[in-house]
Length: 105
Image 1 (cartoon, helix red, strand yellow):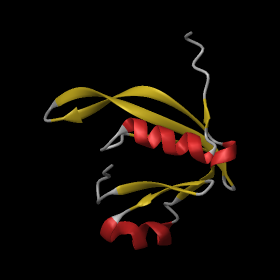
Image 2: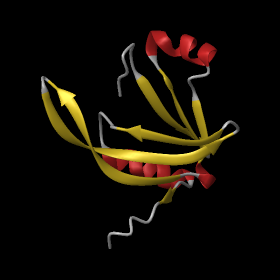
Image 3: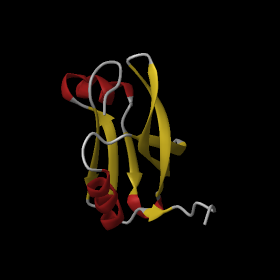
Image 4: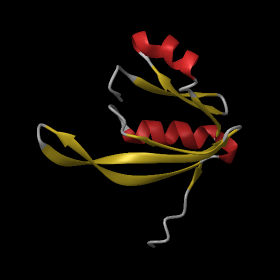
């Protein structure tokens, strides 16, 4: 994933899901408190579609929406994986993240 300054990384570390700035911006992100740490056991996820602006066109992309709670309150993170969506989904399920009911049947 990318932000305006560099990479954004999502890592599954045991039962923790960590979203933080990567590369040369990692240290700055930690200093600014830009890191999100969620307990997988109290986090839900669902698939969604996100329209991203690419070369002047809005391109729909499959994304993963994580919802959980940090000490500061509820957090929702939307992730567009660069690599395998299925591998990320499987790693999150293995860590204990629950699949959110969609209600659409």
